Image (cartoon, rainbow, N blue to C red; front, side):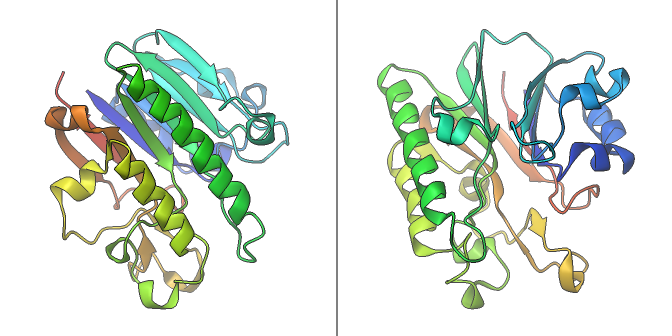
Length: 254
């Protein structure tokens, strides 16, 4: 099974840059898109309905902002839009689908902003999500969380870690929330497979950061520990253009 996540930084712009042929060529079983920034009705039908996929949308109430979309080849057993709190759900950040062996969360985590004005909002979002994950684990369910976490977990996950300890996305309290998820039965399969690999999924548009590979790994997967034996690989497609983020792929044994 192949699951791909990608923050497309505006789906309409990304489609003009040719992301759809790449996705079709890859043929993932599930495609999780974040920061779509579009209402489905704003797209032509051939982009709104993709052959071979059931396309699920969770746009933000505010036009041109946030939003998620999950494309799946097989019908989900259950679809939930949002996280169950209007405070977060108006921004279209969470799309959860249930599959035979796991729940798949497609999430665009909040950004704490340069002035840190949304850091508490972001931390509260993490806490509410963790409550849901804990409840699912207690019920014997497995979980895959993917998307743009807007947090680099450890120093190896960003190029210039020494100068970013006071930057949202690498604040101690944000990184501690990722630690907390991992203390509650979740694993980062990329870091499990590649403990010393320095590879990034996002680059600023400023200062030719991508060509210099001055990036951050903020797009990833966290999976329930019992799914780890099924992991075949995690691939960061850092050669794929179309956004300031690149796609990241999780391969699971059926």
